[in-house]
Structures are given as C-alpha cells and as structure tokens.
Image 1 (cartoon, rainbow, N blue to C red):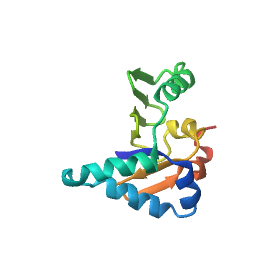
Image 2 (image 1 turned 90 degrees about the vertical axis):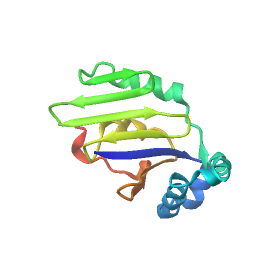
Image 3 (image 1 turned 135 degrees about the vertical axis):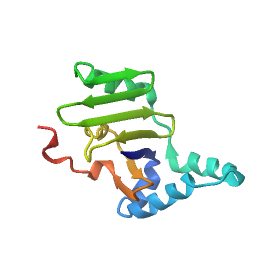
Image 4 (image 1 turned 180 degrees about the vertical axis):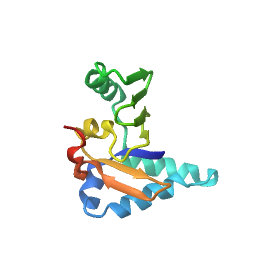
Length: 143
C-alpha cells in the first residue's frame, strides 16, 4: 500500500522550483519529519510554502465525477474507490493543507481528476517518490 501526500504549492514557489522537484520534496520531507520542539517554525513555513486547498470545491467536484461509479463511496471528507475488476483500492482523504491518497495501484483514478488543479505536488515520503501532478502521464489506464 502506497501513501501519497498531495500539496498545493504556492504559485510563486512553484515557478521557481518547477524544474527542481527534488528541492520541493526535500523541503516537504523536512517538514514531515519535524519534531515537536520546532513545530512553530514548521507552521510558519507551511503558511508561506503551501496554499490551503478549497475543500468544498474539490469535494463537490469529486462527488460529481464518481457518484455513478458502483465502486465509489464517500463519507465526510473521505472518498474511496474499491474496484474489484481493476484490483484497485484507493482512499483519498481531504484536509485543509494536504490530501492523503492511500492506494495499492501505481496510477489511481483520483489522480486523473486532480490534474485539473494547478501546482499540485505529490510525494510518498516512505518510498522517496515525488512528482508534479501536471507532469504525470497517466497513460492508457483510463480508456
């Protein structure tokens, strides 16, 4: 099971680091592993580096796109897709400063819908995997 964190990066920061995703990942990883002693510094940095996500807009958009899908479920700010035919089990949790995507497939369905939003950066801190969502190619998975 992979655990991806999706952040909406400040547009001015995004312009500077668009071609240097490792630096964005390293910065977010530093915040992710920050201790309680310096949490105040981390909060201030997050306010400058990460933009809040419009939860209501995203929640409604995802619900409209997937409501007719037999394998889709929604409870509060958690969207789940358990497709037995594609062997996909994916959960997207919406938070104010990030989205958490738990999945067992390489290219989950929710990523296609999230590509509509600009400056989204996806990272898996455990696997050291990261990319800008708008540059991610979904391929022939969504025919």
